[in-house]
Length: 191
Image (tube, rainbow, N blue to C red; front, side, top):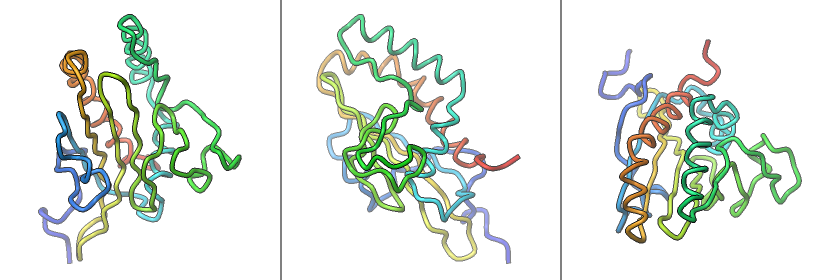
């Protein structure tokens, strides 16, 4: 029997709610910005972190260019140059970079530090004087007759006027990058 459209996971990234009951959802109180995008999970047996590592390794040139411009611009106002989503940072375990089993909470993955880690959810974050950002990849099991899904969520807590100005500029760009990243989660391994 086919899944009803309401139960089927989208093959194209679509906006959704931050998944209730998740570690990222627990960070919502007081958030100044949050969004989430869901897609079909074509690799439900991969851990959430492995899904992120696989997608970050394939960061497209246009995203790299936007991050480059962002990093140059924010240094002018005294904010951190974060680097790139795909930057390699050896895990404390000393094990392979592209193997999720190598990482623990506190290790750095690209521009983020791992804050929560389970097979079904990884929460990564980056704090600065103007705002704190957390990003989650969350694997959602399939309801009977439906496809499993994966949700990419972002939660931001702003600290000051600079943070509000930064978010006013970056929000439209963030949404394009987040939706594109979610789509790559769905497309990974597909021809």
